[in-house]
Image 1 (cartoon, rainbow, N blue to C red):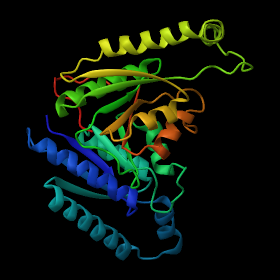
Image 2 (tube, rainbow, N blue to C red):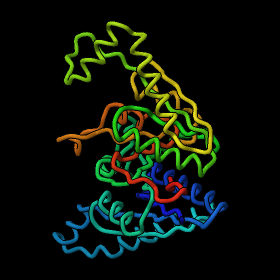
Image 3 (cartoon, one colour):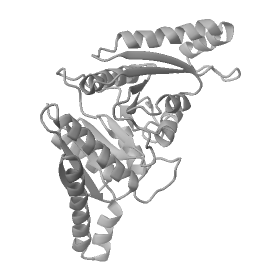
Image 4 (cartoon, one colour):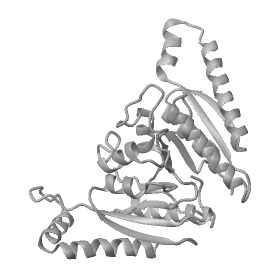
Length: 310
């Protein structure tokens, strides 16, 4: 199975780092099988499209400049990594353009920078990345230009939570690790419930009671959860587990230093899921020193032994 990766390109340092990361990954993969393809996508935003209609300005030179810059980026990346890079310049929403190209080419991964070309806010996620994380039906890898501690041969760290999102993340990580011959570390954060916070479900009430009445039992529950996750992690490599006390975001950031990447399930569901990102995921995206791969809960299992690209 060929690897097909779609990358968002907008001239920002994060986007350039995303393209370089994806191209290096596909180049490495090509040594072990059919060469993959990187589709570099740049989009002229809605404001530019509206401006063309409203002001009757010939924006053809601007489009040509965007295309020339995109082609130059793609050619440079291809020469550096040996990857095949196909460039696309589309009009409209960047997030929609990425999703459309990914669907059209059968991409197994979308790669973007955490910030767009107009934002350098260290603790914020760019609007295109934010929208894509909520809308994408396939894994999204988010790259920060400042994240420079990733080890290409390092382990793959996977955040262990509850529900189908964690199951999808572990399954995806196991397939990827098998293909890349990487060890996996499953990490669960134990965040003791606040004394005064009201429980919002019977399950949360039970967890709160266990944590308050018998902390050792609470710890054992978490140890058992991560052990069961390891048993279900079918991979040819080694699988280790870790349970750490603390909030999920900081725990995963600390655990993933010098890893190849950190994988987490997309846990934001509900009526406001299109507008909000969980605190754990937001912290991870803006503080992790390695790429963050976000896997949707409803991701279909791979039909072959070969894992999807990342």
